[in-house]
Length: 228
Image (cartoon, rainbow, N blue to C red; front, top):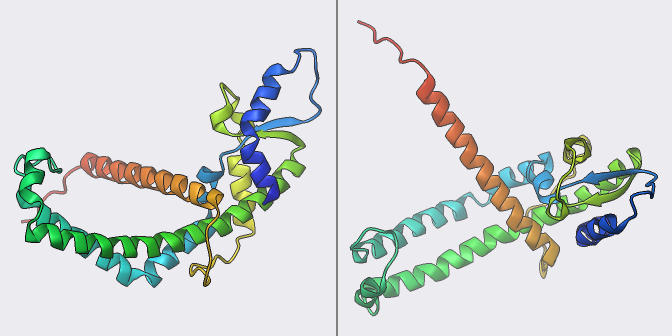
């Protein structure tokens, strides 16, 4: 974990140091590029943990969806222009109404449900983040790597320098048992929260792309002849 922290925190410094190195200097080892959130997002350990969360917290997820729909139904009559949000005029008509009071109560319930779900997910990401550090260290040793940079610190790199797949393979070869219920008094680290936010965004984008690809594939399939 210490290696991972140093690797992520020092990525920009490493990039600056490389830029300042004289052209004649020789580096005895390889320089690699790694993206921790992207690797963690598609690891078997996190996929399994998220599936377990979907099962264990199924009631919370269902309640979250239902209450979100209730909230939308309460606000929608005031959205007279149908743009999905309340402008100043619409907001004035909305404030102080019974619906506004009901929405306020729903927002509190939605916040509690979301916090409980996010805590389970952050806890899972935090554990997989530790596994990532161990896998990264193994790949570094096996490939004689002397520096690991993040994509944000790069101007350009050869695709061969990307070790995400190697780290992912190392993680999947030795999956860890991820717990999904945070212990009493647990507080997530800032690094885990930041990684979770990036993991969520990556997974959402991947899911949207997969859905789009499936829709395009369905549209391209020839229509089946109807039987007589």
